Length: 64
Image 1: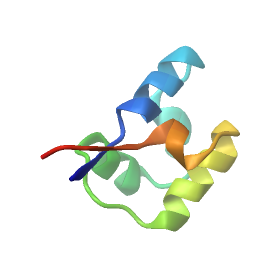
Image 2: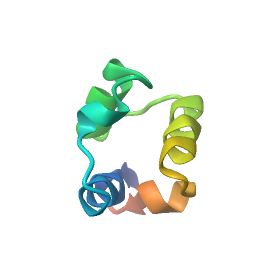
Image 3: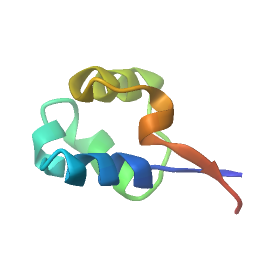
């Protein structure tokens, strides 16, 4: 199983936001999310707080 952040990118589009709008959280972590790489859970919580959403709104488990 892998983690996919497609829901995050769709949420940003629906909210008329860009990746750079989350850059103040961590540009390195945002880049990692774009590659579906692992990031610290603190980063995910900061994103959820910024977007006022839950973890399941920004990520999902997918088959390899």
